[in-house]
Length: 166
Image (cartoon, rainbow, N blue to C red):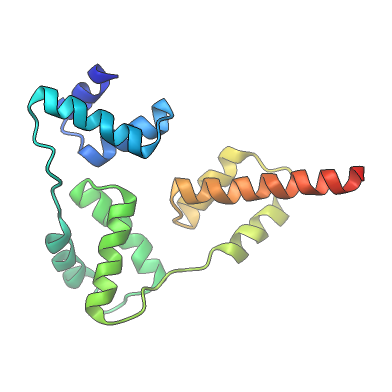
């Protein structure tokens, strides 16, 4: 575990992305992964102070997205911020929310439910990987959010099966 953290750090992977990798690849909770990273960082003498790109991100958003702040541009901005500042999607979304506040507008978000329901109807025997790909790539949902929709779908199937047994 420690060698993976050190190797990723040596490759200039950000703290957030290392923690996300620990959650996704090693099945850790975010809390446990954060603590494990901090333990290694302390031992290795790395600074563990959180580096915020918020001010630079808000300036970037003002330059690039000022005229057209819609759910679609927010999704695009999240991708841009992740690439530009090497932050987690959730951090990029927080920067976008802060930008909406600066603009004094409600934060524009798309409600993906209708598109998701339509996808399930069009795909009567769906595979989880296909759905996750659709939700993340097409709808711009986070992997975590897409997984929650999938869990809801699985619950729906289980409840349907249980109701037919009764």
